[in-house]
Amino acid sequence: MNINPLTLKRLRRFRRKKRAWVALWLMILLYAISLASELLCNDRPLYLRFNDRSFFPAFRYYPEDLFLGNGRQTRTDYKQLEHHPIFTANPDNRMFFPPVPFGPYESISPASIPESNWAMVTLTPERHAGTLNIDPDLAIQRSTGCGFFFDTPDTDVASLQLPNEWELPDALLQAIRERFANRPAERFSQTITRRSDPEKTALVTLSTFTSRSNAPDTVRLTFQEADSPSSALRRRVLFFDAHGVLQKGSTTFFSTLTEEQQAHLISLAQSTLPTSTSPLKMEGERPREPDLLIAGTRYTLEAVPNTVQWPYPPLRGHWMGIDSAGRDVLARILYGLRTSMTFGLLLVVGAMFLGTLAGAVQGYFAGRIDLTMQRLIEIWSALPFLYIMILIGSVYGRGFILLLFCYGLFNWIGISYYIRAEFLRLRHRAFVDAARCLGLPAHRIMFRHILPNAITPIITFFPFSLVGAIGSLAALDYLGFGLPPPVPSWGELFAQAQTFRWAWWLILYPALALFIVMLLGVFIGEGVRDAFDPKPVSRME
Image 1 (tube, rainbow, N blue to C red):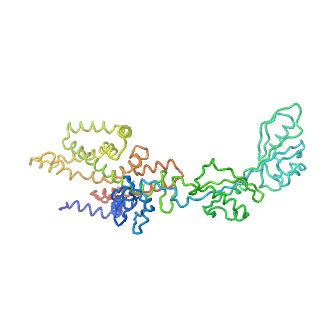
Image 2: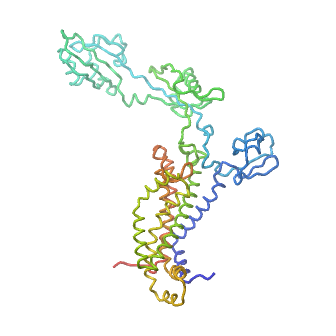
Image 3: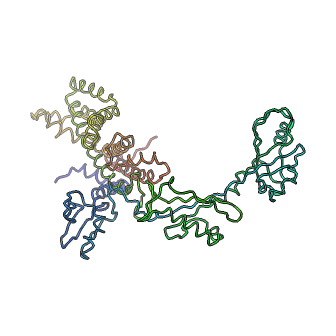
């Protein structure tokens, strides 16, 4: 095959752009890997040996009846077959799965998550509360449950003076005086500090007061333990596995408990974990546990199993996590790469073909044909693309071919402008006049003589158009107007990430994959543009 010397020169110029050259091969490698997705991520084994016969489930469909003889023609669940007595009875039976043994449509069983069989026991300290009555001299006359706030038995509180034990702000004193003066007062609350221990605080509340026939002899104050950093630290969270071993939590706190208290917490945790004979109880069905007194503090206990919920963060075997439907994110991204690249290539090739054809006809014939077609193209480009997508999708449903067709109806317009301009520039050249004098037909002159000289916009815009098509597909899938579920796509993972904003892996890995592919496409486009530029170095003065 004879290659034009100008083309060879452009190829050499492109190879000198190391960044573009490496990006081209990386893009080819990524697409080749995506085309071999079934060999890398699949829930069907690559090779299956069963009763001295060889099978290749990754490439061929085998019904369940072929292995189990149960008469079912449905798809075989090979992971269940691997543990079936019929399969394990023969030691020569074996199967080999791909490196990532999960498919893009497979919903993973929560039981396969190794970190799922845990129970979380929460110990929350109860907040102390009590009431006391004071006289006009602020002497305590009666106390109910306020011994904790004075570090003394409740019976001895009545002999104390309140201002000697607690700092009383002026606003609180004023509220007390108004009640003794028999004046109406609104409900009042304020946090006060212990004189002997400034870190100890209490929330004092005075209820709403209305005027009476006689002024009150005493005023009742309600004391409540205020939230503070010291009290918040007393909340303990412990994790126990099915064997009663402490996996997470404060080992120091757990070691200070008595053996009876430790056994009680372990038994409480194990009672919430599901077993083969005892299904998992619902939250409302679990009986309320009695309080536990530890080191003078009474704790309220709550045990909840660490059940697996989707989406699930990355772990061993699922290196990019699990999405909201229980599917492996790595498999979804790899298959989504194939979908995006195939869609982008087909769309750009089709758009380039239509745009080249329309632009060539306009530029070569010019005149009324050019004017009429240009007005029609302008009217067509003014139609709202997204509304048309919604309308066609609601009538015919969503699908890969339909999406490709609808998007291709609009994507060719831009390249047609460039081809039209090139043909208008070249149609009066000498080689075109010579071709007409030889009697060559119009289509031969257009595509055999003019087009090779006007192909620069097609080649230079191809990588950028490919990047735009991939980004557009991700955007349409994100908005819900793209490929139908459960087709793997990056935009669908973005939509999940918006719903589950705490699931960082649903936005990080798809965004990273989209960024890498688009960055490689831009590098390739820059290299092609520089290779076709007759002025490799330009300077602005």
